[in-house]
Amino acid sequence: AWQRVKRRLRAELGEDVFASWFARLELQEVSGGVARLTVPTRFLKSWIESHYLDRVLATFRSEADGIESLEVGVRGAMAPARPGAATLTKPAPSPRPAASPVVEMPEPERAPRGPVPDGELGGAPLDARLTFESFVVGRSNALAHAAAERVARHDGGPALYNPLYFHAGVGLGKTHLLHGIGHAVKNAGRRVIYLTADRFMYGFVNALKTQSALAFKEKLRAIDVLILDDVQFIQGRSIQAEFGHTLNALIDAGRQVVVAADRPPTELESLDERVRSRLAGGLVVEIGTLDEGLRASILQSRLEAVRASHPTFEVGPAVAEYVAKAITANGRDLEGAVNRLLAHATLTGAPVTLDTAETAIRDLVKNREPKRVKIEDIQKLVASRYNVSRSDILSERRTAAVVKPRQIAMYLSKVLTLRSLPEIGRRFGGRDHTTVLHAVRKIEKAIGEDTALCDEVELLKRMLQD
Ligand code: ADP
Ligand code: MG
Image (cartoon, rainbow, N blue to C red; front, side, top):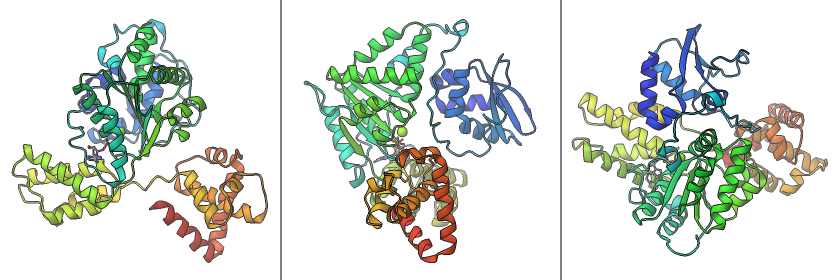
């Protein structure tokens, strides 16, 4: 089963991601529902834990019965792993660790892995499907799309908006737009590199390892357009410093930098203040959630694309309308829905009815992600509802008129975001996590006793969530 897991990971993640992270991942034993995996370095261990644990677990589970959790250990390490530290029992997306760990360099004796493959330095290949042509423009992404096109078509003279920074929740088209820029720049004969944060970090660590860091930097700085995806994942002191230098060097030289992340620059907690403000210094564009019209258009365009290779695949207008209404979360789920409908049609040979569509996409409808709520929005909304200012909420003032909204805002931050108590405390003017905990408990109790407050908080929740 383990060999199948590895084969599937290789097929799903692509050869070079697999080679970078999983080639040396080995199964040590399975006992009591726990699969113990090992890798040769602590760097690999922490990388796999923070980026791929739920993926590996899900794959493993689908190939073997009775696997409950995974542990990743370092081969040859003397000390046993902290019990439970690497265990993942529920496949929830783990928030980034608040303190950015210093990335460790792998031990020199294991280091040389041959010359750095060009793929790592030269960036990830662009997905041929993700072009401007296949990108559907609607109200929520029109500005982002326009900025992307301008930047991509711009030639000669210093970069326009630098950096161009997109942010949006998952599946809203960031990567699609970035690839679109990549294709257009490439087609215009200019030099472009598309890198994910993973690849940037790996490329950099690997370059240090093989003493080609200088070549890596030079290569990065010798291009016309650098595209960096998912920069919220960049962490580690030396790497983020390097990221900062690269950013400065490119921008100062008038080269275009395009960046995407799941949050605005100010909320990139793993990066230091200077890097954040550099990222915020160009044009920052948010891509909003997909409204129903946009969802319907994206769905149609996906269906047409699929029909090119499956001419008998038909989805009637009622079914399409149902899917576009039901799948509200993001483009990725829409794509998943199309795949499920296609699988259903192919396997049964029957036309896709509303009934079968409902069954086929049920899990996507149920599991759709709640909207990501930002602490800042909570503070703003609560402040305006209670006629205080946001700075009152963040201040030290302890008058009742300020304390209550502050506590409600803390409570909402706890229940509506994935942030930890210490993180919430920091975002409320540097308060201690015990203060936050006290506020959360107090409001929970008050809600139980006071129906007016209960309704009020419920209303605030709804306002924040849609
Ligand atoms: P993100 O990087 O923001 O998480 P992606 O760019 O990977 O999102 O988009 C997820 C899926 O949804 C992709 O298949 C993408 O092609 C599709 N998608 C998202 N927005 C659009 C759009 N406006 N037009 C066409 N497809 C889209
Ligand atoms: Mg993406």
